[in-house]
Image (cartoon, rainbow, N blue to C red; front, top):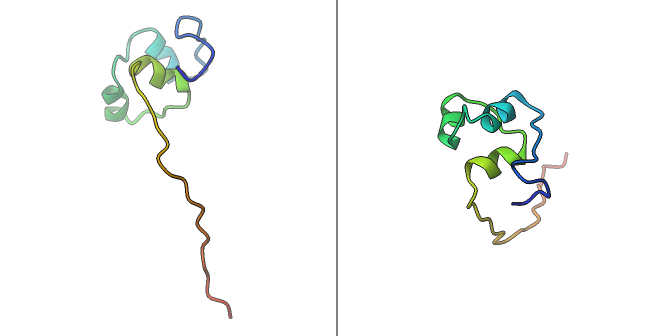
Length: 68
């Protein structure tokens, strides 16, 4: 888990977080179907406990604009 707070100790700050913590939302698909925003990392941690992430490559890009 990316945060230092365990799911059991987590105190939700949003309505979606409360629904996940109470077990009323049990999958990430339910969130997508209801078009609900994910604003707490613990929501993802609770619904996808074995999720792994890896940064492959980061490049800086400058945008070129026409000059008058």
